Length: 356
View 1 (tube, rainbow, N blue to C red):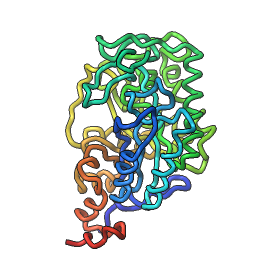
View 2: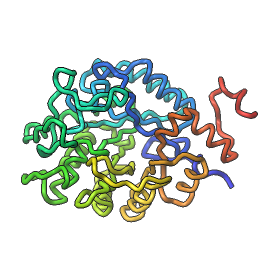
View 3: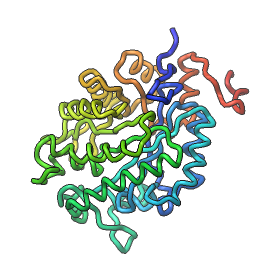
View 4: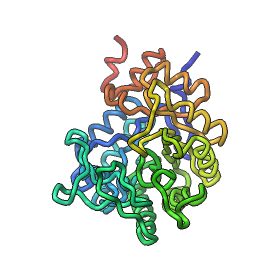
């Protein structure tokens, strides 16, 4: 019986050659938001490695939206040129280039992991952060500034402008980042959103910014290209965003034309309690797919071919996204095809290694 993991997936006008996607992974290697040869080799090697979809790391829509000073950005036209080169290479390898647009909110202005992943102040190249409410992520962090109406309007306009640049750069899949404790997720969760205006309180108010960002992105993103939203299905904390709200939001997003929900979890609060184990987030992808009817992507401690195959073949999700495992093995799809006895095309330059 042939592998379901290596069947194609049609998303609007785009056909993914398999159900293996590379998750957005921060590389902390950009200068002033500009991509460089590290990003070309990092993303390009995953394309030669056979993945059907390569999603570029969280790419900030504004300087103040970066997680770290070394994050990629798309807040000015000059940043487009190198991305065009990277995307053209990915396409040449019969893979699809995607981008994740993001704003880190209160989790911005941090150093790279190998420099302690700590909050940076102005003397260290840091900047003032923003959030739905003046609540820091860590108690020791500098207090973020609660966004006023003009600040919210700027966030929406920045996502719109970055979408225009994404189209010019040649991306074929767009993902809006509303997970992992970053700005849109901060608005979604009552643990970080204590607002009393139209953007806080009720479920309808807390999802408002995400829907307004979606509308802004859709106004510029080609209607025939796929649009994803990444969410944290639960905060893993009492009183936080939960799976039922995720289903409710996903149902609304489907009605508004979103093609797939990339289902992760957590990272909103430091006191979360996550029962980490293989496939620990897959049940959320399965629940959202079943109850909302939207396509889903599964992610999180999925490391083996047969594990990924079971997720797709049993209908728990429609796509499997790999992060750390793809860092360990850039040729993940080629490896998995061998593990599943599936004959797939290799780059012609590598074909002599296809059979031992």
